[in-house]
Length: 337
Image (cartoon, rainbow, N blue to C red; front, top):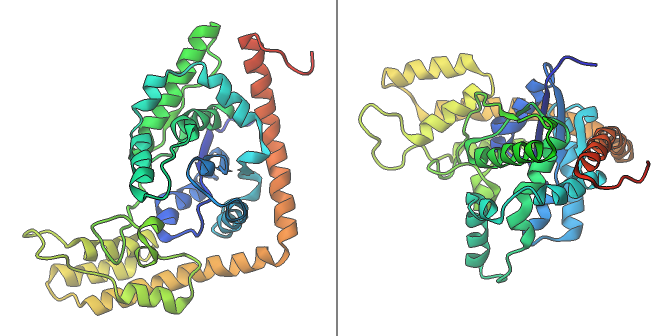
């Protein structure tokens, strides 16, 4: 048995991967693989909580798999949630260890349900939207995760997972589930180059995110058109747009240009065009590596799909064992006696 601790993190298949996704989460996933047993899930059950198109969901799921492998995630660490039905069964059991009041206080439920109402498309809030933090708890606890890398906006959900685990342990009279800890690491917050007052996001529109699989010309154009100043910044404080460009340089590992241009900034001699050119060149060099890898692995998509179905099957064995033990502890019947 490995002495490494377990790490679990998941991502919804919502389409193209952009620099905010990569630097804010996925790059960290790649690095964690060296020191932890990592389980990374593409959670298509979660994507059903808001209105969606079935064909697009399936295509986005595989596209995200290709993207994750292209940027450095090892296929053996990946699983697709719907290939492991034990997640849904454990979610139901956990529903019986979680109060309605606790769920209704979740801030993301309030935000997303309000977003659904204000869209005017459909006055329908699914029960899944209310309940998905319980499914998230099942995702985490299924693999006895010691650590979960999360952002501050997800900290409340991890606390729910810990509360469910503690209540379960108390009810069955055994410290069965590990209480997972947050794994906060230094992850840069990437802002929209079109509006650096807001984070980079697909939901805001195409000009507000830079895909890591965009053509070179598009990446350079988006960086060249980046907003540098939003009004007059506070005295002695760097404007959000300029700070965002420096953050992109630093996150990409180009500390040589970062430090040289920062020296120019501190002298009051920085030329924005030089900063933008350096960022554009750095991002093109970085993303070209990813695009080459993606072209290589998608040359035979059947092979990649086979690998991920195999890795999901192997990871499912852990889920099956956890669910068997949970059913034994809760008085439920297992298929095999």
